Amino acid sequence: QVQLVESGGGLVQAGGSLRLSCAVSGTVYRLRMGWYRQAPGKQRELVATITSAASTNYADSVKGRFSISRDNAKNTVYLQMNSLKPEDTAVYYCNAFQFMDYWGEGTLVTVSS
Image 1 (tube, one colour):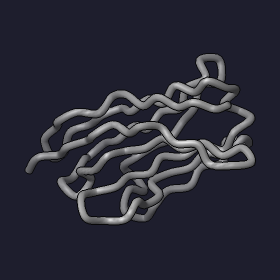
Image 2: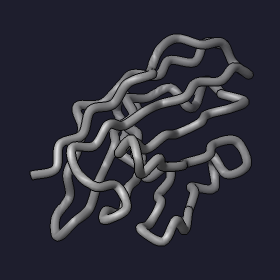
Image 3: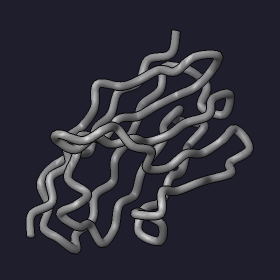
Image 4: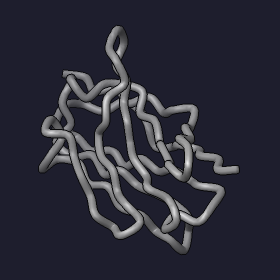
């Protein structure tokens, strides 16, 4: 069974950067990976995805600022977040898909203005 553990969240000021990590108890290249986020009172939304072929996709709101990547040797997926805005404040969840969706517990990112 696939298990995901996120880390790297924290408090940053607007314009700052954070790098989130998702440790995967499986083989990353076999999975389609993604990052989602959920702000208080809002629905969970897609942030970025990376396929087994390393194709990436981003939400319009983060395109040009965020970058998703993977390290197959470490079975880890990353989300580099630059030029953070207060609107980016949310709990960020790592997602993996292999026949079904798997979710981590989430890591909180708070961006102050």
